[in-house]
Image 1: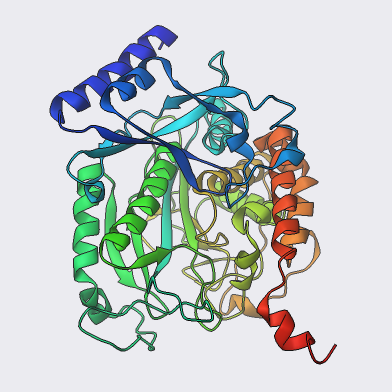
Image 2 (image 1 turned 135 degrees about the horizontal axis):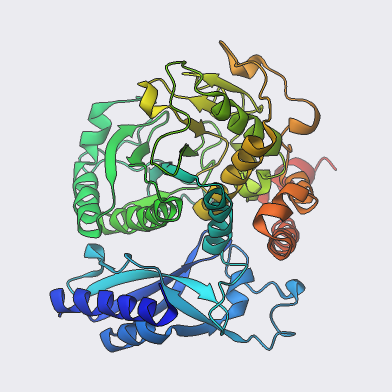
Length: 463
């Protein structure tokens, strides 16, 4: 498709939407930054039509803000660049109504581009796109789904700043029992879930089953897999925003924080992925529960790359609190069949469904960047015919991680390893790796410059 025909198609998409929804006149333009935080502008209908025709300018510095939205001047992309504008262009198929925003509200996703139309190399969506292009060059298509866990919590903090699980409207007591797969727990929050499913229908998000997870107030819903990894991650971005907005409308707060409660399970982002050939056939499909040799090579690549990519899978200080033995969060680069104690799981199912579930990511990870790192490892493993070793049978938490495959134990080590990774630089881009590392190192400095109350509890008298 030529540039001019692409512009016409985009403009036609917007015109068709407003013809069907003439009342909509409050539309949010959403860019997802490195930290996975949605940022953008609220526009009127006539402004949106202009965006779909010629883009909308926004400062390039927001590609390198930290998790709090503060500039990271250390990147050299703020003042030295004159905080110059780049062009935001719409992501096709994402202009949808937002039921929680009122009768006249909608949203659409955008990507950063240089003024000449080139995709911006620090935009997480474009980072993923470049990895997908490596598969396309080999006649392959990743098929992907993102599965996210989250907590519903009381929006009111305790006096000491702590949080607690949300309480059902009829009950004054805070939930305390785990009640994994409990149906009563889903029923307790039926108004929230009913509104959530209704909104996903409006937005055409492929939301499926819901379960009560392994902690009070923790839930998981699944998104259907798609042979379009970019759109699958768009779905995840839109879904996270929707969950938080619907929760707020119901007097709740939804959090995808990796470890909100020290004594409860953390929240993960499980990435399910297979690969189709140019005829649409799953190259992992096999009667063997372990899949085809190429599936095992893909897992070998994941095992070999997980340490290099850990800064993307666990991008924040809180992320590292999630990794504990016997917690359903993996602690070693292991793989197995129908085994939830490993990092890379081949789920049970019919031969045609053979795929791998990547379980290392926290729910706080940026879906675009997490998927990019997962696919980079898979592609390298398939190219190099990497050997994953023997599948784990039994308790994967009994397997010690050692050597180069061992995931970094903390945030600092993870960022250092990511920065020095040749594989990440090859697949994600030299400048992206440098800029992401700078942003994270500045976040680390800012985070640890704050003295927490625990310091006073431990050291005020005893030091």
